[in-house]
Image 1 (cartoon, rainbow, N blue to C red):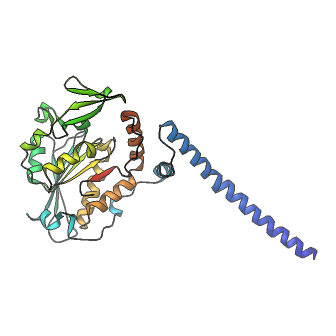
Image 2 (tube, rainbow, N blue to C red; image 1 turned 90 degrees about the horizontal axis):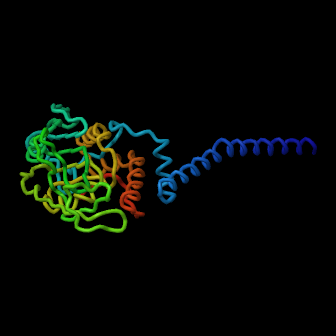
Image 3 (cartoon, rainbow, N blue to C red; image 1 turned 180 degrees about the vertical axis):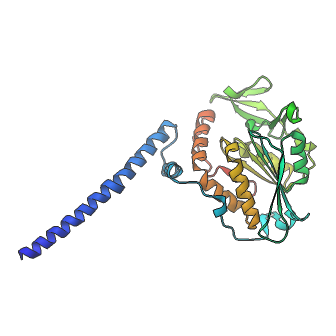
Length: 308
């Protein structure tokens, strides 16, 4: 009887030891992480919801995926209205990339996993090259400032004459970003102003591109509806938040190439990219609160396309 009781005692002791180890090694650190994440969100003036706590923790502890690890189910469509046969009409898929932070001019040819032609990547660095790209390349990517709907700014050194206007008629801009060239129509009580805008320069484009990716701050809410109305056959991809897009130029370009090589869809590509950009999403939501006094609801994604 004593031996049986002793055996039970050691079994119970072992179980309690395992439970205590799990508590101190797994549960308590997780509780501390959650509490730290909650306090961080509060400091950022964001609500510590389950979604945002999970997003913050995953962005801190998760390593970004390698675009080469992305896998797509091969299909005939890049987007609902953009078949691959259209992209390959001239025997290859051409991508023009403009990185305003590090403008370069060169061309790279990437072999395709299919036998229907190569993928050609052209680095461009001037306003004439940008407008020509929209007239001749299949996909155009621009990485730079969103300018609150005023349009892309091209300096005289880039062959431009200021803003290339392609936004809404009325722009909502934080007061601290109002400039002398802005025509203020009305002020609001939340620290923003309504500024006159237009999309007149879109009328000068000889649009051929199947997709334009405007990778700048808040480009989806500021430009997507105008772009879709002007060019309904062109897939516009933009960002829902403020972010440092130029830092992601290489990653996004490589991910797009990978998607095209495997004949994947734009929606699956954006799913992969958004999963890796949770930190940018949270920082963007913080800017929405600070710059626009916006408490949400917020978009679950950073990057979004007009086809979604």
